[in-house]
Length: 181
Image (cartoon, rainbow, N blue to C red; front, side, top):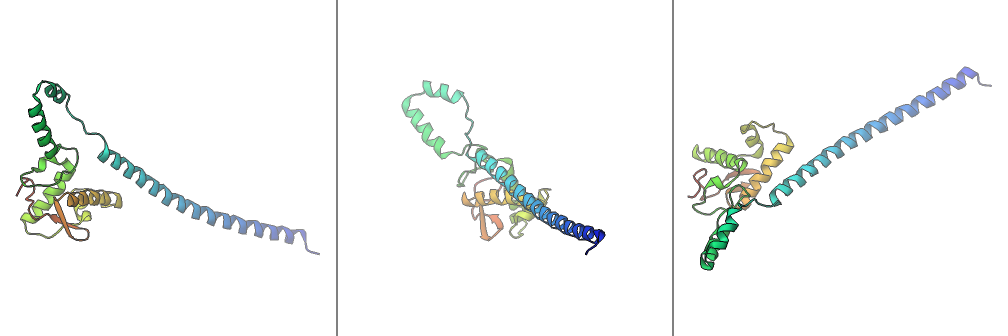
C-alpha cells in the first residue's frame, strides 16, 4: 500500500504539471492578445485617416453671399474654374503644369521638398524608411506606412513616380517646391 507522503508527492507533481501547462497557455494567449491589440490600434488609426481624407472640406461663408449678388453667367464661369482649381490643403489634387506645391498640406510638401532636393543633387529615389529618418521620425512600421500611404497618393495624383516598388522620385514634369514645370 502506498504511503501517504508518496500519494501527496504524486498529487503535488500532477498539480505542478497543470500549473506549468496553464502558464504556457497564458503566455500564448498574452502574446496573441498583444498582436490583436496592435492590429486593432492600426485599424483605428487607418479609420481615422480615412475619415480625415474623406471628411468635409471647410469653405468660407462669404462665398455664399457673393454668389447671391453675382450675375448668373459670372457664377457659372467661376464654378467651372473652381472645379478645375485645387482646394488648398484639403487633399492631394491631380498635378498639372503650373500648379503650385503650396496647395498641398505640410506633410505632402515635406515629401515633395525632400524628393526635389534629391533630384537637384542628382541622387536616386527615396524609400519611405529613408524619408522617416530624414524627417526625424522613428522608422517604426506605423510611421513608415503613413509616409508610404502619402507617397502612393502622390504617385496616383501625378506628383511622384514609383519606377521601382517602394522607391519614390519626382514625376517627370514636376519640379518640386515651385510647382509647375
